[in-house]
Image 1 (cartoon, rainbow over the protein chains, first blue to last red):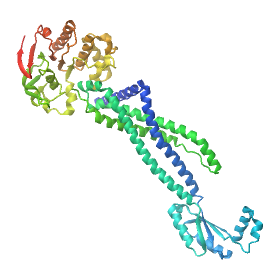
Image 2 (image 1 turned 180 degrees about the horizontal axis):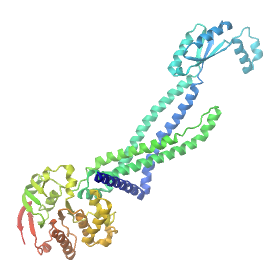
Image 3 (image 1 turned 135 degrees about the horizontal axis):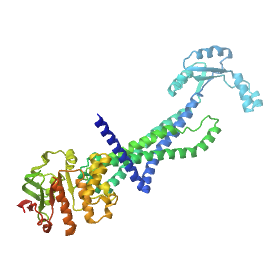
Length: 311
Length: 221
């Protein structure tokens, strides 16, 4: 048991040595290494940045969800004395949270104040405005399809002339954001593929550069695993460092964007402030970089190492 | 220790490098392999080092039948054989110490043991003071000694050399041969391919002479 433990320690130590050795090799070629690292960093930062922006957009549209309202424009002959009964019925619907009634006269009054067309309105023989019932759907019925079916049901009530959802543009935003999500996923896959190719190609060149070393190692009894190890760690470092560069790039870009974005949200009277997702990204980016790095190195090494045998 | 029985090696282009070769080298023996270039010396050494496999016949090294050795076991098999090459095959971006240490690093020795054995090995070839140098800073003879130190550092039972004195002047060559003799005296089986007739005729070891892939004669001096 002690023997086993000792061996494991030795094994871990060797891995650590190879790990640092690979890092040292990158360090000794600062220009070439940093170029590769930056390419990987930018490739990772792009989908990550778009993802952060999209998450923010979703957060904003979720805020607006609560504000989504249905306005019922009542028939012209709808009398105020029926209002209480009508709204009470509506309040029993489970899909409806809040019901507010505004009589035709009240509507006219409001319109008079807001429009400044008071004198003109006085010349009208009758009040052209209908009574309005404003409805906020309950929390469970905020999904677009639920709101849609509620809207249809309300529209079919005989007392209602027209039911209108003011938030159609929100649905459009949603579907735009869904398209965006799909697009970002595709972009992320393509860019991950390009990271794989970049790392694979870099490792391929490294293997060609160290052909002599590989041959000698094999001649003195190096296993394929031993030969492979430094290249896998090279991929590991490229990916991880690329991920960190991506994170820094992301923070830098978002800090440039956050000023104008906050101004914009002030203009819309919104509580919105840019969420960086900095801590999540600090884990996700280096981790995905590392995975891609090791995978790319593995693919390249698998293809090219077997071709280098001592002759 | 090294036993060839009716060994053939045919290449894709139908060229037959070895045909029906049989010979035997005992444990603890030192022997030379000679013959004109193209006679099959390199091919023979490659078969022993399992860089290539025989087309037919049996190669038995240290009681292992090489044709039955699976590919994945080749690295472990090679650790029993010290290889010395004409061109040294040193790694020029690493110090003498790191070059000699390579087989031990591969075998997973701990680093105190590596330090001890590398210094012992360099001491034997007379290069103890140069462990921090890069190979390029050494003379041709010294580079070959580094190559030998690397070949013996993990104490293999067999030492195989391919034209180890090919690039050296007679005096340096004699020094290298004396080194091989020293290892032989402590029990290592030594097999050296060379065409340096002037040198080996002064030495009292068996010669295995190849001619067009066949055994021409065996001479015991």
